[in-house]
Amino acid sequence: MVIKYYLLLLLPLLLSCAPLSVTAPAAKYGPVMDEQQAARLYARGEVSPRYSWLRQNVFPLCNYCHPRKRANFLSYEGVMQVVVPGHPEASLMYQKVFSGQMPPGAVHLSAQKIQAIYDWIRLGAKKD
Ligand code: HEC
Image (cartoon, rainbow, N blue to C red; front, side):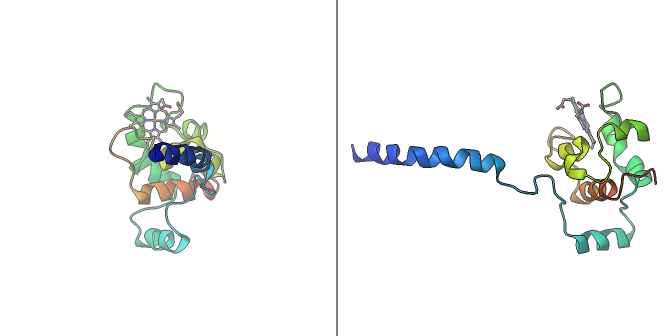
């Protein structure tokens, strides 16, 4: 009997938590590392927040599935269909990789690659 009452008391608590957990993260599609970490990463020269680097090191994997789909990463114009220059958080491409939805399945992009996409878009998504 007593247990039942406890459950009734808990119910509104649980319900009030549910919407919070959906909307809580303020920077929902933010960077994956802080500025200093990113600067050190680019200084080492293995990763670069440039279109030419992404085209060589990230987009081939995406195109394995994407050439016949709406978004394609074969050309700069194709990539720009899912990118809002200056605004990674508003770019469908960044949202998909940051959330782990793309590439689908168990293997996700490394934090370094996700950060490079973030900074490339933040710096204006130039054809550099
Ligand atoms: C294993 C196949 C596969 C790979 C690899 C893949 N995608 Fe996708 N992608 C899909 C499918 C299927 C959809 C459509 C369904 C969906 O939106 O979940 C999609 C949808 C998308 C969308 C939404 C726009 C649209 O065309 O529907 C974006 C943006 C996207 N992918 C980005 C990427 C990026 C960036 C990569 C590389 C890092 C990537 N994807 C790798 C299969 C893939």
